[in-house]
Image (cartoon, rainbow, N blue to C red):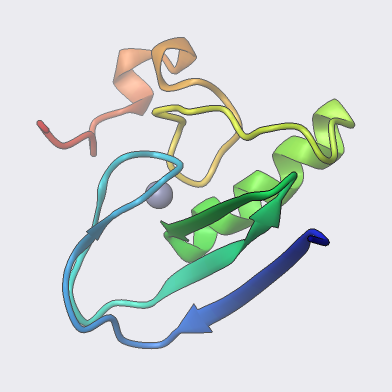
Length: 97
Ligand SMILES: [Zn+2]
């Protein structure tokens, strides 16, 4: 089986999801990015805020680790730092899980 990767942007979600990057809510009827594919024989699917989807690309470019697994997070929303590395005062929008 060959690997493949598919990514599309949904303009309005029909329900709420949890972002696979920052672990915050993706509100119903907001836009999100859906990725799915097969990596080394395993099917995966993820949903992300648009800014978090961009952050994943930036993460791989910054760390030059294409093909490696994504960090499990939670990561900074729209950024590439681990959430625990973000100073509290920068993180006022954080939701309680
Ligand atoms: Zn997110």
